[in-house]
Amino acid sequence: MASFETITPVDDTVLLTRQRHTDADVDAALNKAAVGFDEWRRLPVAHRVEVLSRAVRAFVERKEEIACEITDQIGRPIAYSGSEVDGFEVRARTMLSLAPEALAPAIPDAIDGFARSIRRAPLGTIAVLAPWNYPFLTAVNAVIPALVAGNVVVLKHSDQTPLAAERIDEAFRAAGLPEGVFQYLHIDHDQVARMVADSRVAYVCFTGSVAGGRALQAALAASFKSAGLELGGKDPAYIREDANIDHAIENVADGIFFNSGQSCCGIERVYVHERHFKTVVDGLVSYAEQLKLGDPRYAATTLGPMVKASAADFVRRQIGEAVEQGARALVDRRKFAADNGRTAYLAPEILVNCTHAMSIMTEETFGPVAGIMPVKSDAEAVRLMNDSRYGLTASIWTADQDAAEVIGDQLDTGTVFMNRCDYLDPELAWTGVKDSGRGATLSRVGFDYLTRPKSYHFKFNV
Image (spheres, rainbow, N blue to C red):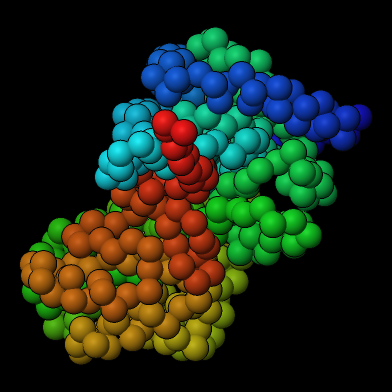
């Protein structure tokens, strides 16, 4: 039986080893899911909410243990890892609270002699393919809404974070979730392609790279089933002339550097009104140079390693190419002894003299670095913000809400922020356009993709 290893970026050693599930295991899981669906879908929404609420409680009770495991698996500083458990709870409880109303039948105006309604029918088995960078937050976006809507779930998590799938499964078992309603599989890419193409899978929720999204679409090409795709971004921030500059610097910097920049909605490019350009650049550099790069298991660490040395090397190359093309790197790298140029430990960076001819301003970086450009007007900022094949989020930093509305209406993104960034509100739809994906999770809208409308048209007195 094949196996795989999870290498911790903390010290580049083997953290754990897991056996791959076999093709026979996948087949058995899909059969078990079909049986579980037949039972689970018939339970009232209120009962499903009760069971899943118990699972959320069981999960949160292990917060400290889970936080340590996040740090070990992906290198996020322990000072921040526990917040992911908190976020899991908030998103799960929000979706459970929205479910009864979102899943309730829609009743048209009454007509004598008829009973008419549109109901939300579950789809069946949902395959959830989750990434490593926010192993629980990305999974919960699909898993909890899918289950409360009456579907069953098979979760395939990243090889970097197998413990995430296992901990979610343990919480569901503790809550008494019926057999077959939630399962996880440790399988490789070829097995994933065969599984999602299987007729027993009704829908796929995928979070990952653009290349991964294309591979998934290819696997589904012979069928009519759909997939929700959240594929990342190159998210811009625009700091207007009227912005609260101190607030903007602090929060944009957090959006650039949190989780070592490994966030699909993190800030990767910044446009600043020319009046404030030097102030903002100096502030971002100062913020970067105060970060503590080091062992993420220490409470004082504020910037941990990237998930792999190869990921850090990609960012180093992208920075190097930008500098060769005329960009200027401003952070004093001597302040970051942990970055020796060979490991996953990567110093933060701020670049100026950037143009959109540089990949640092156009292609996803997924690291603790951002390019900064001055602009003269809102129109110039909008043009540059839209000059991207991605469209996940954009943030506008301003004191003028009306101006933010006007700018936001012109931006090709799924979410427009004003005076905040890098955040998911579970009562709002999480969605992207262009190469950032399609479909939506979270909010009442998220249930539309995990169910289908089914009309009931009954005539009486015949």
